[in-house]
Image 1 (cartoon, rainbow, N blue to C red):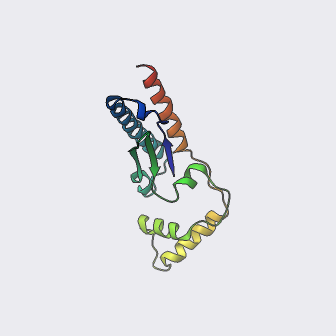
Image 2: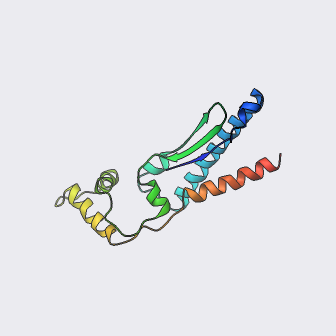
Image 3: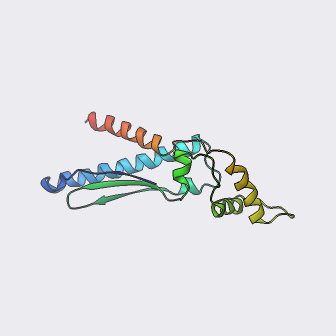
Amino acid sequence: MKYEVEGGGIAEILNPVIQERLVKYADKFGKLAVQNIRKNIREKDLMASRRMYNAVDYQVAKHEDTVDTIVYVAVPYAYYVDKGVSAHFPNLLGIKQWVLDKGISSQFKTTESIAWAIALSLSKRRIPRTGFFDDAIAETSRQFTEEINSL
């Protein structure tokens, strides 16, 4: 899951000082976005294993004619947590990893059977949209726009 902000092809006509300012602003946007996404993860109680929280990051890429800020959450399930999904059978490997991460065990059940039972239960329910990522990007854009307009 990622979000990109592109500079729009103006860097080639700008002097190097302005280009560096664009890179600094792109970096500032990325830091603010990561901060807002992590805040949403905490506030929406999505910290089951801290993997998603720790996987939030950003990169600034300076190209010949653009500066991009790429904000992402490097876990495969982040998209589904953000957007929500209708009822379906979930990824059994992901649930098995979660069971291991949480230390859930039983002397009578294997990790696989515990994960299977959880997956079966989840398959009967939908996962509601949390918006932890999209809402944070919208808030970051609003904050950043206010800051730029106040210059």
